[in-house]
Image (tube, rainbow over all chains, first blue to last red; front, side, top):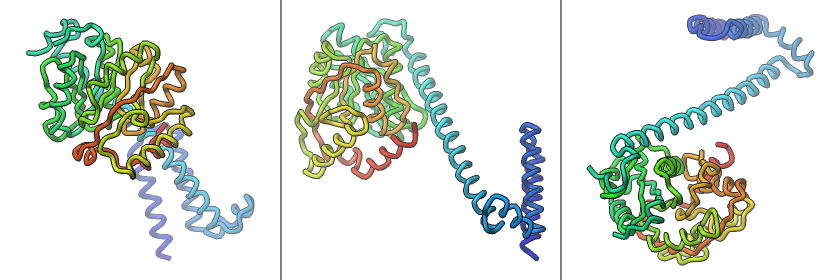
Length: 118
Length: 225
């Protein structure tokens, strides 16, 4: 089936990217490859997912995967949103320091008032 | 020019974004009364920074646009480094009166924070819809901050410098006004409201906040904490 080829190719691509960018902890890399391996098994033997689904109390394997995807996406969005807000705060702090420093280079704070015009 | 020590130690912080047309007049008026002035040009794309340079005033420049909250906080931190004893926030669009500043500073003698109130004072040039909106905003704001004020977000305020470390605003955009009220509430500062006059001109209305932006403000307030 074409879909299997497409899915496996996508998993291999993700694995390759994960392997190329090995700037993480070995544990993270191991985790990524473990997830990819499980996904590959699910692609090749879709019926096996029904067994796992039955263990955890979900009707079909497809549904179980759907739920997992939803929860992961929500987690990922929250994670990056938090990072985004933190980064915005850091940028604000940098721009603020820069603005104050530039003004203090023009007018050093020690100088008395009235001396602030060039 | 008046050489008044209180006025020298009182820093008027003006956040300006693309206000080239009016900022010089506003800064000149404040400087002329002897107050110390710091204008924070919030990454304007026009000539705001150049036009704000008035002898006796200081201009800080944000390299990029961060928002009014961030700009005010920058001005406040600069003023604190200059040994400010009181901080006044003042809008750049000319809607406030310089003559209201002494009223605010006077009220600081019996309070830590003085908030200008359009509800107690006069609002000139606002439509009926805007007046209703201002009342509603004050109501929502009171519910969220637990304070009872007659105005939610008037840009004219005065603070004792000693309060500022407790009132560090993190909200970059317009939600800073609500954030500030929560910080004031938490700090247990003594707060008074004084009537101030606000003049809505064609210019300030076009530049100012539309009612719809209230939704964005609410979002920032709820989720960017």
